[in-house]
Every structure is written in C-alpha cells, then in structure tokens.
Length: 430
Image (cartoon, rainbow, N blue to C red; front, top):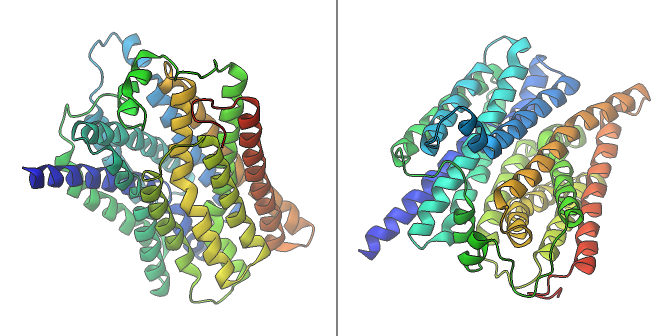
C-alpha cells in the first residue's frame, strides 16, 4: 500500500514537472537558445528580438491576470459551475505545441502574435498545473514533493538548451529547430496527458491549496486570521513587497533572454558557448528542489534578500568576469534562486494577506510580469545607443546588465528596510 502511494505521489509530481517543462522550458524559454540561430539566419535582429521577448512576457502577464479574474469573468457569463482546470491545462499544452511549430513558418509578421499567445498559454498551464499538482500532493500528504514539479521549467530549459546546442553543431536553421521543439512539446504532452483527468483539480490555486502546502497550520489561511502577535499589514507594506518582487522580474530577464548572445560576443568561437543556458536550467532545477526543503524558521524577507544578492552577483559576473568560468558561475548563481524567490515571496503573501491570498499573489505576479516586459526593450534601447556611439553591442549589454544587477541590489535593500520597519514578531527578524 505504501509503495502504491509512493508511486502515485511520484506520478503526480512528475506529470506536473512535464507540464511545466513544456509550458515554461519550451513555450517561454526555448526562444533564448534559438535566438543565436535566428540571428545567424538573418531572420531577426537584436532590436526585433527584444520586442518578441517582451511580447511573450506580455502574454504571460495577460494569462496570469486572466487566471486571477477568471472566477469573476465566469460569473459575468452566468456560469455557476467553475471551469474545469484540467481542460484549460490540456488546452494550454496543446496550444504550446501548435504555437511553437508556428514559429517555424516563414511568416515573421505573425511571430509577435504567436509569441504573445504562447505567453498566455504558459501562464494558464503554470497556474492550473500548480493547482492540480499541489492539491493532489496535499491529499497524499506529500506537499514537499511540490519541488519536483517546480523543477520542471529547469528541466525543460536543460533539454531545449542541449537540443539547440546539437542543432547549432549540425548547422541546422532556426525554422527546423522550432519545428523540433514543437514536436517535443507534443511528445511530452502525450506522456502526461492521461494523468490530467477531468475534474481532478479546482479551477484555480485556491487559498486552501496554498494553506495546505505551507509550513504553518491551514486554519490561519482559510479563516483569514493573522498569526498570533503579528501587527496589521497596511497597503504601503504590500505595495513595497510587490515593487520589490517586480524588481526580481526585471533583474533576471535581460540575462535570461540574451545569455547565449552575450556569451558569443564575449567568447567568440568557444566550443562551450551553448552550454551556459542548460547550466542555468540545471541550477533552476537544483534551486527548486532545495527551496522546498529549507526550514522556514526565520523571516522570509531575509531569504528573499539573500536570493536577490545571489542573482545580482550572477548578473554582475557576466560583466566583471566575461570568461568561461565567469559565465558558468553567472549561469549557476542566476538560476539557483530563480524558483526560491517565487516560493518565498508567495509564502510572504500568505503571511501578510491570509484572507486575500489569490488577489495579492495576482498583484505580485503582475508586477513581476511588468519587470520582465520592461527588461528586453531597455536592453534594445541601450544597445542602439551604444552602437550609435561606436561602443558596439558589448557596450550596450554591459550597461543593461549593470542596471539589472543594480535593480536586484535595490530589491535586497528594500527587503532589509521592510524587516526593520515591519518586523515579523512571530518569528523575529533574526
């Protein structure tokens, strides 16, 4: 019986990981390792690439907001029964495969539309997969295995990065690579398809689900009562938390979008150029697994500040130490806190707004999405100015990465300030 339960827990966690690998590792981030191929083929330039990236992140923001307001929209349509989450999840996975394949078509005018829609699909799959997987694991008393699911995006990045590296070595064109990734998305979807049975998940990640996966008693999240000894939390504190979280989206996205291009500019001809992106994905996987095993016995804002400092160091290393070792360390330090920052921030939301978890998570997700949207166009603008000034693309990337690293440092300082101003007396500020 115990063995059967263990198999079930693993099948749930792995199905969630596969879904997130498709939605995030392929639907969102396959663009990064394929960007050098598209540049080489001459079908795009860096300015256009930055806007394509931002359109995808805008779609992700739109999808996240759609999830947040979905119950209200459903009610406005006169439907009393909530939309089944697994139906949306499956549709999002199929759409990811279709939209990835569409990027192989010689229709550059439609690429922004495909990338926007892929962003929407990624957000829908992320939210509904989280709801399905976390609810199932909570019922199986295996909430800690959520880290396996959240390792999925990193696994997708590793696979897509290694495949792209192989295709570069074989001198494939970008269109063929997009077709391969589309086929891979459908193949992985087929693997997990039967596990997502209709009716097995709530329509959204509910407050109860969040409570079941958090380290504190569920009664606090479901009743709306704050932890004993905790002072009321005002709009200013929530706004600062949301802004600081948005800085994380801005701080990582320039490196996560242009890492292979930046490495090629700094190390032309190196045989290791295409391995930095898979290394980033492997670090994301490791960070996801580690973050859910940490004992959350101290103020989470300290952990958030440390995560920002680690990422700021990773971003800065690609500027200060543009060598093989520097880029490898940069990839690892950027990836390790990637999932942990989201995990800790969402736990902080539950502490601050136990009666309004979903809406506050939506606010933070929106700010994170705005940060992601702003990053690539800023990098493109700095690149254009740098080229016009005769400094070349390397100079533009240097300034953009310095700004990104600085934003993460500001975010870390904001958490330190919040700890001092609004201490968590239930745990102390140690």
